[in-house]
Image (cartoon, rainbow, N blue to C red; front, side, top):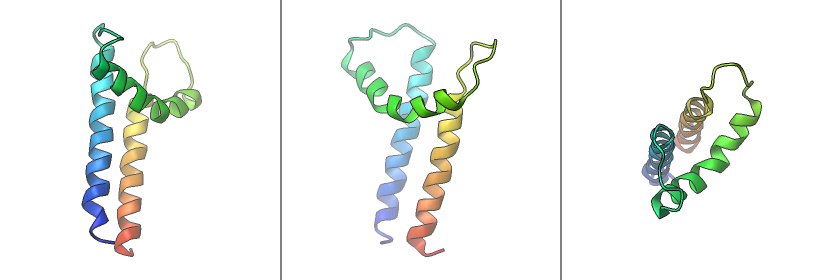
Length: 87
């Protein structure tokens, strides 16, 4: 089971990087038909959408769902690794 830990860690790191890339893409106007942009959006949307639904919409036009998603993903990574290590 310990051999799964690096694989899990790499998978979570890739998800983190994709979410950060999506945040950076939101600051510019990328071509929505670009395959890389589409891949980033299609991969991160299932992760970010639930957080957008639970986040209150205020007067500030800032989307905090990526930050919350990164925090929850980090918690999930740590929990999963601890379970594999047997606490």
